[in-house]
Length: 217
Image 1: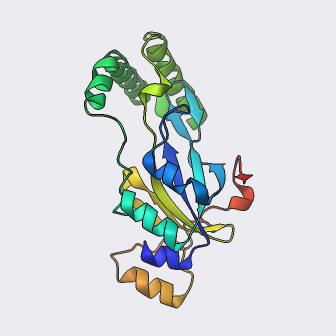
Image 2: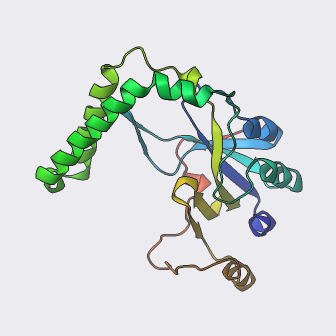
Image 3: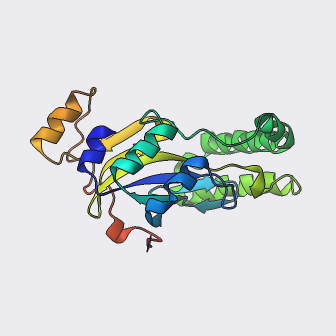
């Protein structure tokens, strides 16, 4: 984190949760340094739709680094939820009917893939998957409420100018780094084992100049 903040002009955090979910503590505390937002770099297959979640872009300063490290202590950690005691048990009970239906939908999709789905295009496969989840959700019409969910922030990504030079995916515990200088590379190598993917991963890793849904404040 120290190394990335020393190189960065801005950083972003992906806002997890439903579109109407309650703000998390980290999002609230960082709001004075918010400079923009963009649609996330990956497509999320969420129930019966395909969408991108929102990434919030903040100035990289000493103050924002200290705030971030108070709420997320590890590069692959996620913000702790503000949900009250017992809320998770309430969600598990309320959404159990949909959880069972979604497991059945996934089993049906797996059977489809094993039978002939692998011969179909990725677009066709996604259509089948989303259709099965749509059926599952339509069978539980009174379950869902966006206000049941508390947002949290994860996937810290760092930018120099418009270009992302450090990208993380929290739930996969993966990251990619673009070497900015020999000194930056040497410092990174001291932190762990790295796989050289130069030539296999296009650069820049991501650009704000072409980001979908980019809004500057």
